[in-house]
Amino acid sequence: MESQTETTVRRQRRIILFPLPFQGHINPMLQLANLLYSKGFSITILHTNFNKPKTSNYPHFTFRFILDNDPQDQRISNLPSHGMGAFNRLFVFNEHGHNELRHELELLLALEEDEQVSCIITDALWHFSQSVADSLNLPRLVLRTSSLFCFLAYASFPVFDDLGYLNLADQTRLDEQVAGFPVLKVKDIIKLGFKSSKDPIGLMLSNMVKQTKVSSGIIWNSFKELEEPELETVCRDIRAPNFLIPFPKHFTASSSSLLDQDRSFFPWLDHQPPNSVLYVSFGSTTEVNEKDFLEIVHGLVDSKKSFLWVVRPGFVKGSSWIEPLPDGFVGEWGRIVKWAPQQEVLAHEAIGAFWTHNGWNSTLESVCEGVAMILSPFMGDQALNARYMSDVSKVGVYLGNVWERQEIAKAIRRVMVDEDIRENARVLKQKANVSLMKGGSSYESLESLVAYISSFSF
Image 1 (tube, rainbow, N blue to C red):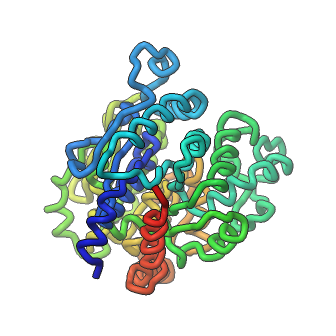
Image 2 (cartoon, helix red, strand yellow):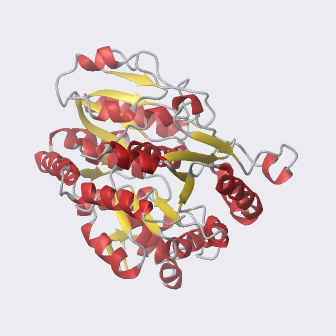
């Protein structure tokens, strides 16, 4: 066991963490912060006021709010506060945030008399922070909140662009295998949602890849046994050390939720037979139209399986919540809630499968709990995650965005009984558990990260 002296010494070292202000990025960063705090480091969180986390849930951290503190800054005040429009904040901050971040870091570096800042850990998409850290001789590690597989695909975007994948005119090529990534289809690349590696999103991802490669280290929310071939490629191509740690195995993300979580369904769930309930959640930003929503509704009914369905307010376009829902739909078959403590749900013995949008957090949480998946990616890296889970890990049924009740019901019935898929999911959970044991890959990765950060000279 670690000595009290070692912990006290590290408590004199402060780590600054800088998450991207979106739910899927906040969760792993605050899980990492809790993990590092448990190892003895003091923690400061830099954050925007946009999507401000509930600081009262983290009394052991120091929070400082930056980049959008000026209400008169029209670059910020005119941006939408929801949907993909809010994504424009990334472009604004990456382009104009250098001076403010540098000023904040200078204050922090000079502030503490009994502590010293060891490093800054930023979301990889805050690519502008690398030049700021370099100017202050401050080591910058990055947290990559998606998979290694996804990162390698992003790094290949110029090649995809040259091959015509990003702006495809020939629709007959949609099911063509992607060069260098045979598990992917061209339609998966198209789902990423931009037309060129040189459009704003393409350039941002290119800068992310470039600045990640020159960082002082990369922290991945994953584990070696899940993405071993990809880890070998990353280690060959990038000199920075890599640390793979499955955060859901250490801390839940419930305390960092930006939405209030409903727990009223747990008495009902507790009374369901083991492996009998389908959990459905499509994340914090996805949307469907009313027609597709009703196809999901009827697919759930026609499957004749019990379900717990998270329908976030705004999920149905043009509706505040579930107004289009037919009368008497739910009954005793299931429950509909606005938000739920997902990791706790996935760990419940009644859950038999998870119908997901395949955001990486949701995907990894399902893997860590050994729950088979129905895979319905909407956008971005979700399509890459879904293909990997379907065709490499083989722990899910790929449905895509096929909003047809018969296909939905068929996929539900299959995933709830397919023993090959369910066994693959159980084996992957066991591998994650073993990786955490002393001598395991994730255990050693965490120990190496702690030692690495501790080695930075003041």
